[in-house]
Length: 342
Image 1 (cartoon, rainbow, N blue to C red):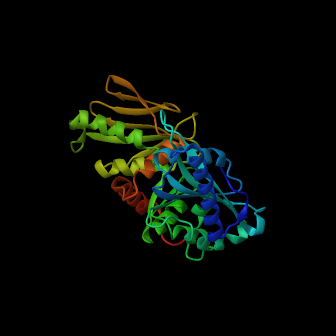
Image 2 (cartoon, rainbow, N blue to C red):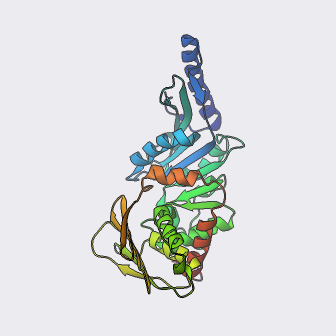
Image 3 (cartoon, helix red, strand yellow):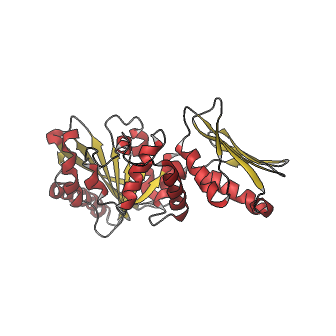
């Protein structure tokens, strides 16, 4: 159920939402019993570009996330054809849990923003976020990760971030030094930050941690003699850099990066060499890892790689993430150069 296009003014948007719920309530009255449950645990704001090639997948992810993380979802889309520079429409996204007659419904607001009107977005959002609940911003505008230096051109996105409890980005494919500089600036401003490139490491980190826990001798000083991290693609991806930082926290060894031939770009392998045995963890497919410890081999599911799984994991951590914070601080300290990047 949705409204038509309306001016993106808080009072008009809230009135349209009220009309949607009134219409759903009318269905309840006609059936003579409660059929709709309104659910909301946060405001989830998705910021995307007009030319976002994966925006359809992202929007489908947003709908799926509502089942586990009910929210008032606000999609901000840059659009040169936006009516009056700033326009909106509202929806009720509803579903029935298996075996239940009652629908669960969440609100979705889509706001089209002309590139010249981003500075007007903040006041609009301020009037439509759900009071007293967390505000999470999933920023898919990768161009913002190139904003560095104190003289960088300001963006209307700043007013969006000012409302955020947590900001989630994806540094995959970005210039890592510039992206880390931007994220470090947000963290200094008090924002909690999540990076989907870090989240993609969950299966890798859990598998390595299990291997070490099963052979505690590997944690003894000097047991691990070298760490090689393989990657596919033109440059070392952020995921490989994060993994190196995570490993360095527990092992006093500087990992080396090795480019692998072929395969999908990204983290491909990590090899930890010791006198006996060797831990080798290799990506063998989009959803599979192979772990070799000495003569032992096993396959490990590389689950959690879809947008839904990645965002689901990030939305379960709305407070500080100690492991990410430690890895980020170590990586940022060794990567960000002095002075602004040009």
